[in-house]
Image 1 (tube, rainbow, N blue to C red):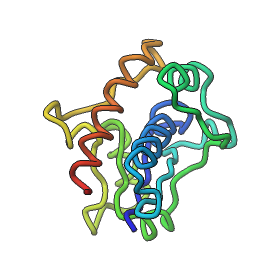
Image 2 (image 1 turned 30 degrees about the horizontal axis):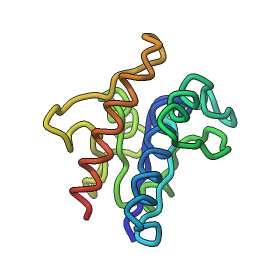
Image 3 (image 1 turned 90 degrees about the vertical axis):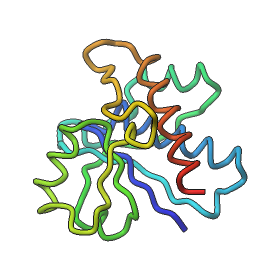
Length: 149
């Protein structure tokens, strides 16, 4: 089983969008038994809060239903349990390295680095462009699926 943990700052926008998109893609491919997918935050700011309503709305526009969940912070146990910790931007990677004491097993990666457009997933928190973030995440998850299967 491939275990993937998507990471962003607060775990209410990009990482839960990635979690739901990847789960959707895995279901569509009939591979549910081959994957374990979740998401977490590097910060404690939003712990317990649901997916941000505009992020949920963007998922719904594309026929992806967001599971009810609360934001949580990544832990060292997550590093041990998951095969990949997929971050949305360089800030998340830096925070993960600080929180986890580095990345000794090479598990931390940027989602967009699996695409032909390496770099960061657009942050909709400030731009309010959840459509652009969705597009980045959709592309990244699709390429990640190709890579893993």
